[in-house]
Image (cartoon, rainbow, N blue to C red):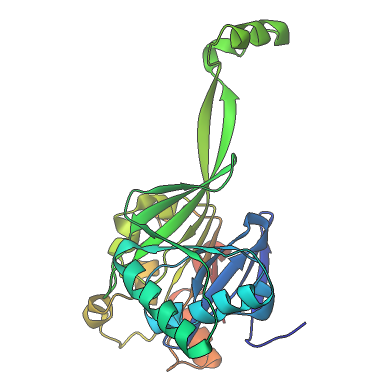
Length: 279
C-alpha cells in the first residue's frame, strides 16, 4: 500500500468515509461502497480505482490532482474516469488537461461533465445524485446522494402476490418510488449553502465545511469569502436532523489542541454527539 497523504477513515450506516481536508491544502473524499468520490485536491494512490468523481469547485486545494488522477489511470490501463463539476469550469479544466498532456507527453483520457443546480445524475437503479447550488467565491455546487426504493402504493398493499402480478401484467404501475437522502457533500460554502438547500439538513450523513472556530474571528468576513464558522452550526443546531455531521476543511491557523478547545468552549455536546470534526 502506497500512502501519500494522512487519510482518515470512519464507518457509519454501512458507508466507509475516507478522506483528508484542510483549507488551502488539499481536500479529497471517497465512499467505496457507493463507488464515488468528492473533490480532487489530492489523489491518494488507492483512490485511483474509483472511476466516478464529483468536484464542488475549482480552487486548487479541491482540483489540483485532477491531471495526476487521470494520468495514473491511463498508465495503469484503466478505463477513463467520469468527473462531474460546475459547468462553468469544464472548458478551463479540459484546457488544463491538454496542457499537462503536452508537458507529460501522454494523453489525458477522461469524461468531464458540467452540472448545474437542479441536475440529477443516475448512478444506478438504486442511486441518484442531485446537484445543488452552494455559495463560495467561485462557481460551486454541492451533491446529495439519494437511495431509490420501490414501494407498493397504499391502494395495493392488501392484495395477494398473484393479484399484484396480474396487475403488473396488465401494465398497471403498482409501485411508487421513494427517495432517501443518505449522503450530502457541500464542499466549500457560506451558510446559505445549507439554508437554501434544506435537504442538507435531512441527509443521513452530511460532509461539510467548518473552516473557522475561534470566537473572535469576524463572521461577516468569513461568510463573504464563502466559508462557515463553528457558530454557524451552533446557531442552527435545531435544524440538523442528520445522524452524523462531518465538519472538515479546518483552517491551518489552528492546531488540533486549539480546535478541540474551541469546540469544548462553544459546542461541548458536539450537537448531541452527532458532530465530528475531521482532523
